[in-house]
View 1 (spheres, one colour):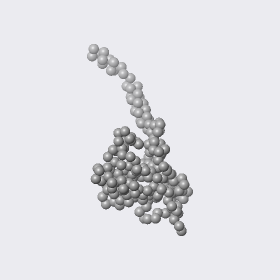
View 2 (cartoon, helix red, strand yellow):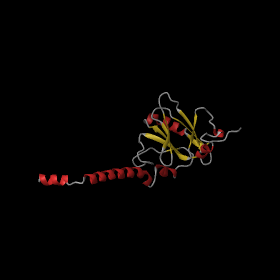
View 3 (cartoon, one colour):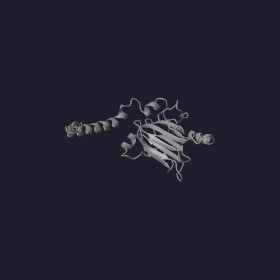
View 4 (cartoon, one colour):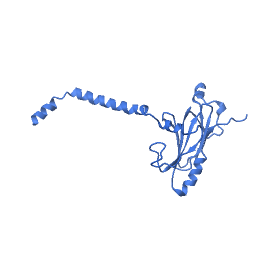
Length: 196
């Protein structure tokens, strides 16, 4: 019995087994990288149809039966804006008053290209100008002077479209009214031109 087992082990074609393991590893890596491209609907696709353009919307509380996207935390409230800079600059502002609050910008393909997290010693006000990507390209990577920031604390970001998500921790009933008031103060709208 041991002799037959040893004979089978020694008759294994080692280069063939190594090639099969290597091919399996390559196939696994390719399948992992292709999964986002093969998914029928992305998070952006799920939300984009239901959200008005350039308007901040506060989502209903996340429950097991009501989740706009998978894996949203049930201990947080969310405000989301689908922004589009096709017709001009979008002004995005929010207050992140305490640790746990975050503002994130995502492209339609799901890339997170900006993130601001509240923390001790940081300014709670976040003000962004979302400018069309083509304008920055035409000016050699520089932002047009006609969309210059009103305040020094405003950051200009080149983006054509995407989703802005504000996450506010839900710390319980006693804090909920204040958190909702701060979420309602968030703005996402076309920038009004200033009179010269």
